[in-house]
Length: 187
Image 1 (cartoon, one colour):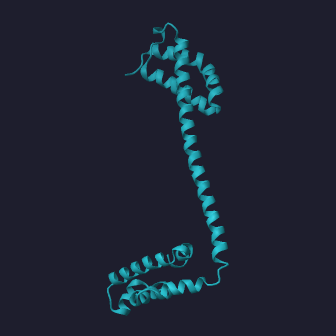
Image 2: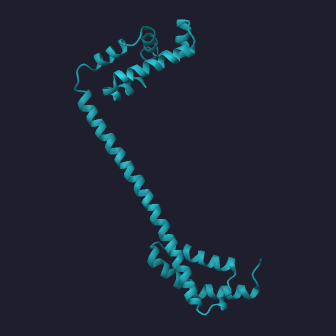
Image 3: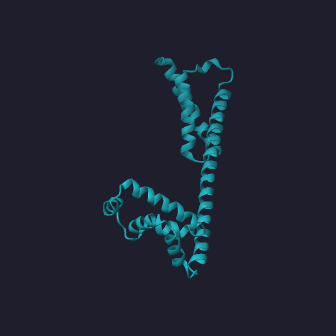
C-alpha cells in the first residue's frame, strides 16, 4: 500500500526534525558513525513500512526514543555475540598454534637427536608380511602407482589397495610413538 501524500509530508517533517538528534544519541552507544546512521535509518524505515500515524501518540518523542533505544540494544547484543564468536575462534586458533609449536619443539628434541630413527622405521617395515612389505616398498619407497604394482605383480588394484591398508595399519601400530615421522614419510 502506497502512503498518502499527507503521510509523506508528515514523515519528511519527522525525519528532518529528529534524524540528527537520533543519530547523535545512537552514536554515543554504538561508537561507529555508520552504525549509528544505519540504526536511525532502520527506525525510519520501520516507521515508513508500518505507516505509523504520528499524531496517534500522546508522546511521539518517547515512542521514537524507545524504538531507537531498542534498535541500539539489538545492535549491541548482536555485535557482542559476534565478537564473542570471533574471540572463541581466535582463542581456539591460538591454542592450536601453541599445540603445533610445542609438538614441533618436542619433535625436534625427540627425533632429530635420536640416532636410530632410520633403523626403527626399517625394522617396522621389515616386520610387515612379505607381500604387504613388497607392495608398500614399491609404492612408498620406489614411488610406483598402484596400477603399476598390480600389473607388475599380476594382482588386482583392489589387492594392492588392501595390502596398503594393512601396511598402514600395522606401521601405525608399530610406530605409534613416532607418529609424526610416520605421517611425514608415508602419508
